[in-house]
Length: 445
Image (cartoon, helix red, strand yellow):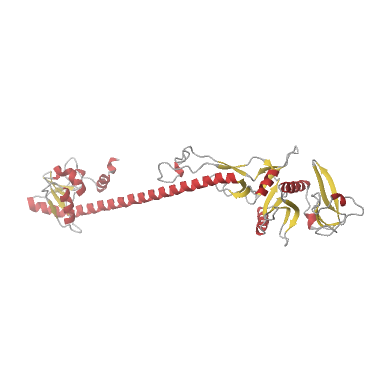
């Protein structure tokens, strides 16, 4: 297995991927020298020697343990060719962006070891560039990411694996190395936002009304219909340079309704701005929908309350009419010496009052609805109108014809059943249900 960092007996730590070994010396001063250069492993102190190989367009320099070396962490962390080449690329691109890049940089407490630690010129930012070519669980990679975050180190994981279940969970990208030897490409993990708006932003033409909420009618402003898409493949060097320049940042996608909101992606500021515009528009739209829904709810509650009040008024009217039947029959008998016939229910043509017939002709009306009396003045003027209280009488008098006779009778709380003979007339009697339906206008539906 290849390692790239060792310890020189005089110069200290060396990095053989750098032409000056990271300490201002030359590779030839330690390559195939006699006597052998004093190189040892930073983990096990075993002797190392410098190796040079050519791989495609790469001239590879790495360190190898001498024969019979013991097992150590450096050897166990040794890498295959793909891993090694990716680390070389990451370090090269970071240096090309004006940053320093060192291999195998470990935390003081040993809690992490970065494949490539890129550091800006003023030391204000450090980014661990991790080549993760082997399988790793989501839990493990999140734990390792948290360790970097706790140390104030940014991190990005790079992998060429076809299936990357943790791509949405940590700062990461998927890469591919073209067969033709071209530059390594970023194929997943970076995103671009494609905006889409209705032509008239004040009236959402793509709105599906079923999703707007119950009772919300009329135009609603467009909340935006843009979506996040995976960025088209682009070179690795451009991505590393963007990380160093801080022009691409890790972002948790917020545009809703596309199935990818909540995932982590690398995005540029311009795409963030486009998404922000849609997020704000969606929030405004939802506020309007909430206000309209609240208005609709209050209107519905008011209608229901009015309906309940109306039904209660109808029930009270029916109770008054029922309670007055016996007193009215007795009143008419004592006045004219004959028993009248009383209809079963109130009728519209008698202002929803219960008509009283004498010799098959209308004689009186029990508790007509005051609000309906004015429209029927000429019809009701010859008749006696009965009320159950002075208050009800005052309401009826205010709507009745001048001089209209309105009598107040004391209603009995529980009147005894009185034989009531329905009149043999065309308008006949109605059931209570029919009377209520007429009063509510349901019989015309």
